[in-house]
Length: 280
Image (cartoon, rainbow, N blue to C red):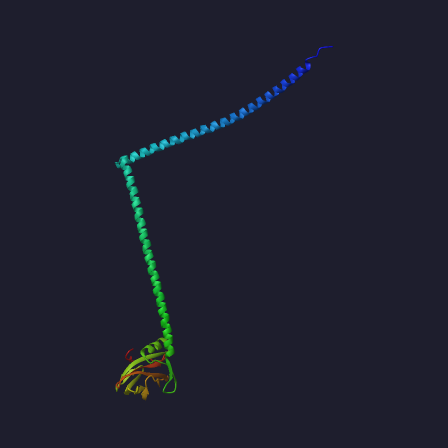
């Protein structure tokens, strides 16, 4: 029997050795690639650090230069003003205090102005209240005027013609004047004295205050018109003038046996009296 040959074992050992060698080579290549990548990153980081250091150095140099310039400027200003650094700081503090004082003063003035504005607003509200009161009074006056107008009488005159509204006192006569429908001339007539009223003349013949009766004469267009035994507040009518205008005479008061008081109402187109009557 022949001896066994060691050749297969040697081949297996050689194959394992080759595999390990290949793995070692691949690992070495991977390590080289990784080392190159790390080296590149490190180089970039070092470049950034170097750039940042350079920028910091520039900023530090600029800051030192600025501080130096400020010191020089401060010293120059101090020398030009004859002041030391301590005096400059004191001046700065004084300016700051002045600014604060001015700010406080402005705040006080602003508060005072706001207070005045509030007072003005209060006054305006008061004026509005007064205006509202005036409006209320005006409305009340209008209501009273309307009520008074409703109380005014419209009567038939002694000629049988329907008269306009008749005023029985001075207040009602003022209302008629404001209505503006006719002209009104007040008078106070004494006994046996001819008196011009409007464009005619009147003369009292008799007055009876006890019974509120009177008699008078109207002088118009060269005529004498006797109005005998007439009563208080009675419309006394007569025609006058070339246009034959209708006048109305009303006696409101008989104070005594020698005096009567009243008014004459004429159309708006009646002539203006040459001699103003009393009370006009």
